[in-house]
Image (cartoon, rainbow, N blue to C red; front, side):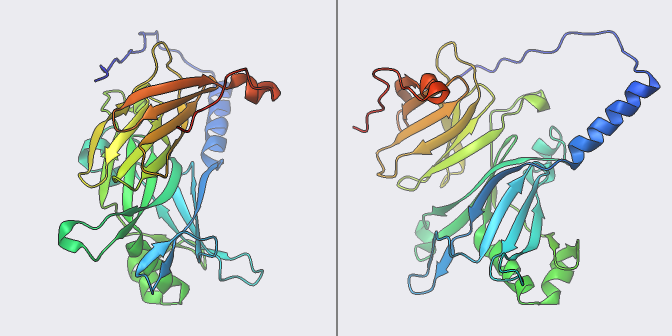
Length: 305
């Protein structure tokens, strides 16, 4: 277990800005609010009627994008006169969707979304014939899981011109774009708690091990990579940071062969290989020289054995 350490900011004397400085700060803050950064894109999986399941394909109808504004945009790639599709609907993700516990600590107006992806959740014993496709939304404070079939059904109705779907379940933004107003996550997977809301970890990337329903989330809060059991909806632990290293993690990927190997990367040019089942470090490789000047240091080989 990693102890929680919080450093409180030192007490400072109140500082007053001049009117010109206040105006400058207001303009700068307004520009930051208006600026939009797209952090992630994902093709929605296509439904295969013969197999009664979804499959990932670039021929999917919908493309999703997440941004710094806390909004997910859905594009219908089969619509639009230019052949490039059109923005069909948007989904606002706020701290209120976490419930009262996290809403008290997070800014409900802006909740940037850092990563989106799709995973296939195994059917439970009571619903063996159903395999759920989930939309994974990574934010500051953890991960939210949405049932994709619920969102897709609404998008289909809007795309088909069913006004009731847009008028009763959404609010129109523009002439052809709607806000999905009654879509909620089926579960939330929080990071370690922290009394300082600004210190809550940002999950910047996720990866899913379908062989055992384990979701990994790379964070920037010093705890390392979070390990969640999707079936039991609980945090199993973290792939803790290496001794003396407090850099943020930006990426994580797990092996597709079910072997439990997890690879993480972040600040400092380090790539770490972990045993995801034992939550232990296998090896650490310094790849900084490779990214700086294109020459890898001798011995910087990540074994696949």
